[in-house]
Image (tube, rainbow, N blue to C red):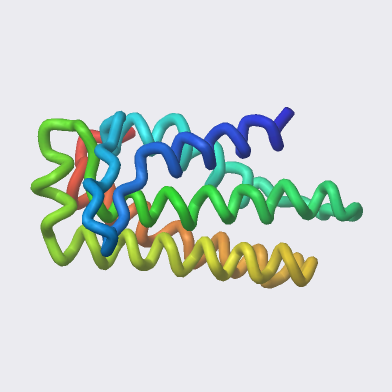
Amino acid sequence: MLRIILATALLVIFATAITGRTDGEAAPVPTMSVNELMETVVTPATNTLWGIEDPQSDDEWQVFIDAADVVINAGQTIKVGGTGPDDNTWSASAEWQAFADRLIGAGFDAKTAAVNKDLEAMYTAGEVLYPPCEECHLQFHPDFQ
């Protein structure tokens, strides 16, 4: 079930991602706010990563690989903003970009750890993931609970 949710989340991210295009076609436009993306995609994926216990099978490790992919892709999407009233202003700031880059980097750390089935590295990746989330919330969404 979690794999289906994560796969759906990946599809949502890809559907809303804005990428630099060199072929002259218009880039896709986000279909949700950053807040909606955080609530429906990022929070479940980060909770999965932070909730790791001791996966044994390839399928159990795949859950964490998938969650890391969601974090990476969501971070790339967050860099471009969304449909919320402040999203494009936020995404235009250097601080926002730095937080998104740290989120993406932590996602790559988690993915590498999961691919290598390295539980200690997963714990470390979770510790690296938390500060940019918390600091970004404090700066850009201080009312967040």
